[in-house]
Length: 240
Picture 1 (cartoon, rainbow, N blue to C red):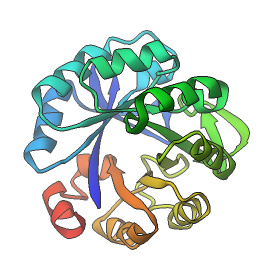
Picture 2: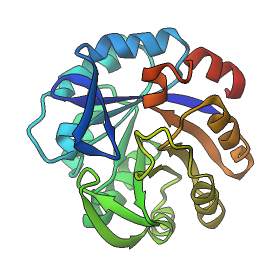
Picture 3: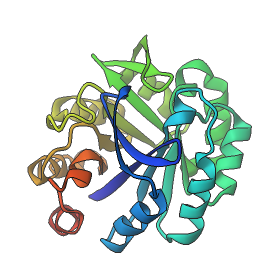
Picture 4: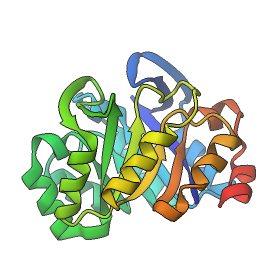
């Protein structure tokens, strides 16, 4: 199982939000490239990078940072945040990013997602940001009536093979993983899945590892890495 460090970018800094709220932000570094290098040195096989400025629909200069990460660190990057056109997908991939995460577009522009999957295949995944079993969009700021499992099933029909599942009520809270919701998504859709949200300890990762036979590929870990509650090397040795 992959243990994937999260690097959330806000105005050029590496930050963490609580439940996706911009008003509840902690800055951990003003040098995201150094953070990426640290996780690479500790054995990360993927990095999960999010442009929060882009996700909130604001002007962003974070793509320059992402390009340096992709070119200099040597670890594959999956990137999301504000990617809402085919042109944007192409631009991100041209930076050297390995995998693009579409979120809001999966709800608001299904044709875009279908085109992106048809053109780029495994380089496209969809982030399902889930609250009370429904998908939230626009940087988690807008709730929808779209059932997460129904959307995931539709995505599979378009050729999608993998989703990133985040329980946003747990994200940045260190409150534990949504084991039931993740297992339900795996069993009912047949998609491969990367879990995110609430991971607080090595025990949470060991709990998720039990879902590997169902198609769980990995877990994105954010706050627990930055506070030291989880040591990346130890986690990789235990579940990787």
